[in-house]
Image 1: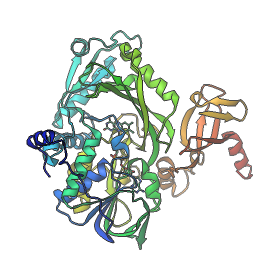
Image 2: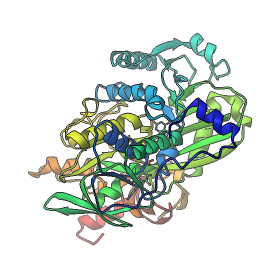
Image 3: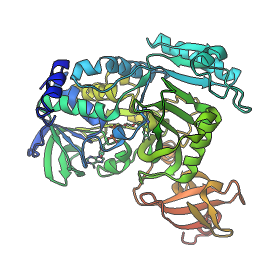
Image 4: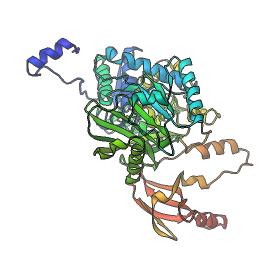
Length: 416
Length: 97
Ligand SMILES: Cc1cc2nc3c(=O)[nH]c(=O)nc-3n(C[C@H](O)[C@H](O)[C@H](O)COP(=O)(O)OP(=O)(O)OC[C@H]3O[C@@H](n4cnc5c(N)ncnc54)[C@H](O)[C@@H]3O)c2cc1C
């Protein structure tokens, strides 16, 4: 079934009785050529591109819970291509180009909204750093504009410009950045993959790997053994514990990041605003809720919930930036578990085990990467060579002294 | 979270700075022939367990001692805290740790 305006009108007039489930619910087969572990955004996108673009058959996605139950459905939905390093920016710009055509590509409304992202700056040094970042973005084909204080005032006159510690002196504006409906992205890729014949298998947890003489044969699951030619693992916050089952230790720790939604308010914020110095970022959903977040809680966690101290810290950051939100009620708070890599950058690579591939280390920024991550991982699985925009995301880069240190804090693990 | 400091009693975890896996106490020998590999593993690789985890917390807003806290990473339950100094000293004097 293809979606169209005509179909929506017809259904509206006939009581919405013609909509069907948008993917099958098949039983697992005894073996597949390709198995993707993890039915999150990255796993589903990988399966989609593997089937559609690289024309591979016999693919399954194994998800321990329901599709989209992980971070793809828990994030604050920001998409952007405002990185700086040559190892990163071309990849995120590739992702942005895929976002820009995503809904046409998979015929599903993912509510991709290029509402613009403004990174606020507070010091002369930060202005210099943002000018440099903006130039790097433009060189990679992205867009960037440096705004002075008046430029920011025109957009958001109600921000607290005179904050004693972090007065707002300008901002880096990335107009093509914005937000997308996170569940819609997962569902769109799932439907697209299903239409290409991929078996999406839910409630199927991978509990082990069958490896013989350094070569992968298949996976043990909660629904029995499934043989596989190649297995790609894309389990986000579970990377450490899943790869431990294959005997690997990773340059990754799992940490919790919280997100927040306020009660619905009148339209106030039409874009995304980030206040990096105060650890706060915010946008407004189409329902009117302010969607915001801040820092990770700061210690290893698999709890999918955070602690009060960070809630307070994020609220303080928000109040410092926009005192007007002080009266808004907080409706919802939740946490997601992220795989924090030791340099803050991802890994898309083969592993030392033949036939086993890894997509991990997305930290708190992997939602925007979903299309490019899926494409690049599918490219690697299908061709055994890295996609040109992902060739720096090697697993052995720490050993070889080639971390991708986007934040400019030195090669310091623990400072993701 | 409240951390049971061995000297000071229950303290709010917000008084502490977190450093991560307690295995960081076991710094490899920089003069050993395989030092490069050992330091790579020491610095970057983690067991990252879901469950009981021994980890380093620095009492920055308090007595500035280093603690080894045993904590469950699934429930956030804190199972115990020891002075890192005691553990290191016990090890260097050949005692069990
Ligand atoms: C609160 C929060 C806010 C964020 N905000 C942003 C943002 O604004 N912009 C941005 O770019 N990024 C953001 N991120 C990061 C982003 O959400 C993640 O990096 C990204 O979603 C991870 O990829 P994924 O979608 O594939 O992960 P997931 O959706 O977590 O997919 C992994 C899947 O693997 C499954 N799985 C795990 N173990 C097994 C197993 N053994 N067998 C089978 N399946 C298994 C899980 O159930 C899960 O469904 C945020 C994250 C959080 C938590």
